[in-house]
Amino acid sequence: MPDFLSFPPGFIWGAATSAYQIEGGWNEDGKGPSIWDTFAHLPGKTYHGATGDVAVDHYHRWKEDIQLMKSMGLRAYRFSVAWSRVLPKGIPQQINLPGLDFYERLVDELLANGIQPLLTLFHYDLPQVLQDQGGFSTRDTACYFGDYAAILANKLGDRVSSWLTINEPMVFAADGHLSGEHAPGLKDIQSAIASIHFQLLGHGLAVQAIRSAISRPVSVGIALNLNPVYPASQSDEDIQAAILYDCLLNRSTLDPIFLGKYPQELLNLIGLLLPPMEADDLKVISAPIDFLGINYYTRSVIKNEPGIPFVELVPILPPGNVYSQMWEIYPQGIYELLTQIQKDYHPAQIMITENGVPAGDDIDLDDKVRDVRRIQYLQDHLIQVRKAMGEGVPVTGYLVWSLMDNFEWAHGYRTRFGLVYVDFDTLKRTVKLSGEWYRQVISSNGFAPKAFYIEPDL
Ligand code: FCB
Image 1 (tube, protein in one colour):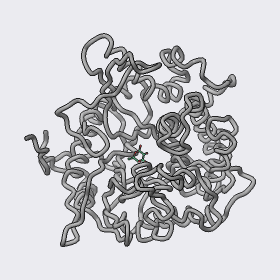
Image 2 (cartoon, protein in one colour; image 1 turned 120 degrees about the horizontal axis):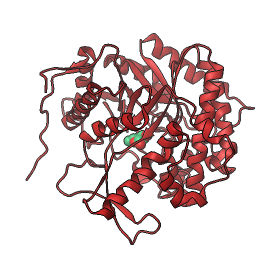
Image 3 (cartoon, protein in one colour; image 1 turned 90 degrees about the vertical axis):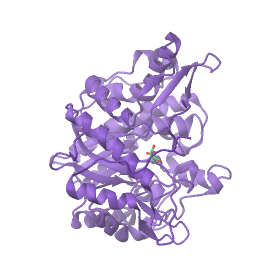
Image 4 (cartoon, helix red, strand yellow; image 1 turned 180 degrees about the vertical axis):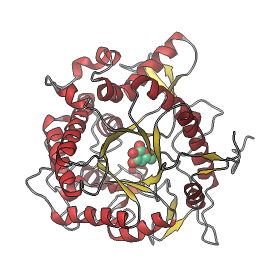
């Protein structure tokens, strides 16, 4: 390991958020309800009944938040647009101008402060009216998504150079339509499968819409949640189970996007449940993208389990490893994932669109948040990202999840992911030690690797 690990000039350092998790203002200025507004208001769906009604009030504090980004020296900021803030009914016939203006002001202020905006069009918060008509399990919603993309591209295409269509289609399908832990709260395998196909189709239609609305060169991508998958043992059964899980979690979206087809193992398993496809769906889905966004948090370790219907497998948490509140901490997984993706799919460019760790951060008497475990996590993952880059993987940037503590879906406000601490009662923001560390990393375009935190081993 060199004394100082430097990144190439122009490497994009930033942080990410999403609309429902930070904005609040859930019914202000003409915004229509999204499925997360509906879901979080139902009893028992989120930890302690938390909602994003106020969240961290970014809808009103966006200027202050941009100053925080500037104080950390961020070069880029990934945010999402709330579809129902711009189109309260989801459809293009009724545009809510105050909603559109909010994102225009945000983009202008980012640019004025030297921060590159990365705009995500859809991050879980579908307009409720579209869900009432079947949501992303229908072709219509994919088409409306293309229309919505065109409206944003026409409005902001002269200023926004990096576009992400959809955030984590697989998580939206699985948690929202199969386990029911996320909005819209369905437990229906058929609609889960349909929602993958129609989100991907929506992605393809949005890519087309963005390219035809914006004449100057812009970058368009999608953010996928990918985990490298490992068998729990070297038994044939576990190896086969891991191959199938990799197919379900990773290849079910990577293959159609990059190879224009669904993996055969997936078709064998769920082919009969696929929604009706049209002849050129896969052609639309696989139109070339400029970059792949990867959201990386952890790996998956998979064991064969004949008792589990259908898939006959189960993810396990190997004992003795290191865990956060939500997942195993496994930095070398991001290296293994990046090199594997490069080998299998050769994306033109890769951006790490999310990476971070939940921790039980607390504010000390002197107003400091000493989140050394987060610093260690970020550093250890960046070491692995840099290693993959050294082997030719074209990673152009890295975005920490998240800029600031926020509403973590079903976990409500129980977990904190931010570089900035937010007091959820007063909404006061305080840059954590990790934010200070990140500022130094950005300003020197690298860091001297060291041990900040030793995981206790008793
Ligand atoms: C990702 C989501 C993001 C956040 C992080 C922790 O899967 O995209 O909104 O919840 O996990």
